[in-house]
Image 1 (tube, rainbow, N blue to C red):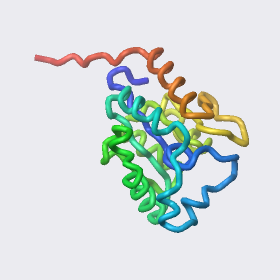
Image 2 (tube, rainbow, N blue to C red):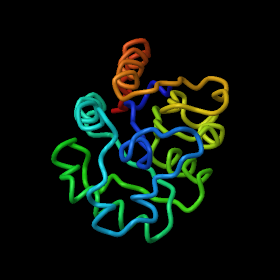
Image 3 (tube, helix red, strand yellow):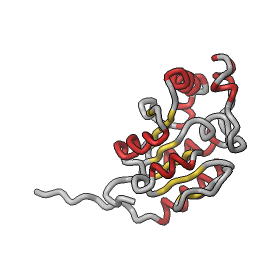
Length: 180
């Protein structure tokens, strides 16, 4: 981890914040193909609203949702976040939501934001983040093995525990020296 900058958290939306981990290959049909009201009523992942406020506080608000989706799902995601009072409940700043059209493009957002810890349920995302994000968490059940160097929590409780352990084990950020 870059020791001159404080840690920053990135979190995927689908099957991480919203909808819960599904069996590998299952789709979240209520959110993706159901009606708008059905999408808004669909649940958060179990434990997300308990763990995220603590993680956002741990990262001192330096946390972002980074999600891959098209325009229709992007609108639904933003509406879902508002409908579930996500920003107030988690402390994540409203402006800290990013979208991209390809999973591999999450690496661009992570590099721009200086993300040090990323939670995502897709192995291909974590492969794209190798060399960019030092602490990666492949969330939920998976059909295959995790990429090298990626932790594999199944739940939000496990994710929070792993991140806390990684933060405690990392060297503290060093203050930059100012010249006079």
